[in-house]
Length: 126
Image 1: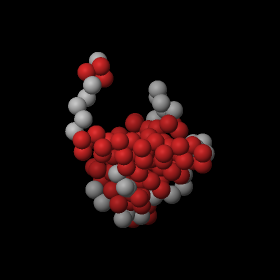
Image 2: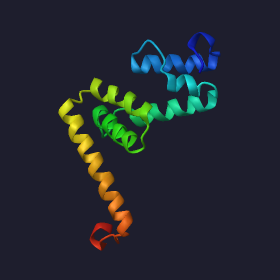
Image 3: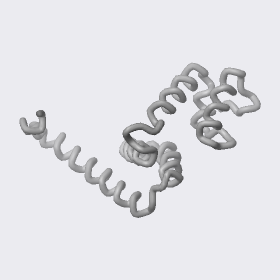
C-alpha cells in the first residue's frame, strides 16, 4: 500500500485528483493498493470517475446500484465504501432495507431460473 508521502509524482497526481473530486482529505486503502501499479491506479480512477459522474442516473442511484452489485459479489470492501457513499448521497435506512430486499430477491430468482434453465419468453426479447 502506497501512502501519500511515499508516492511518486504520478501517483500523487491521481491521489490529488481523487481527494479534490471526492472532497476528502485522505486516500482509502483501495487506491493505496492499486498505487503499486500506477497505470492500473490511473485507469481505474479515470474509469470510475467517468462512470460515477452525474448523468441520466443521479449519484444516489449510481451508488445504490454499485452497492447492490457489491453485495451480490460479496465484496466487503466495496459494500462498506459504497454504503457510506450512498448514505452521504441521501440513502436512508428504509431505502437500504428495500434495496437489500430487491438484491436478495433478484439473487434468489436468478438462481432458480438458472437451475431450472427457464427459456426466455419471446415477448421479453422484443
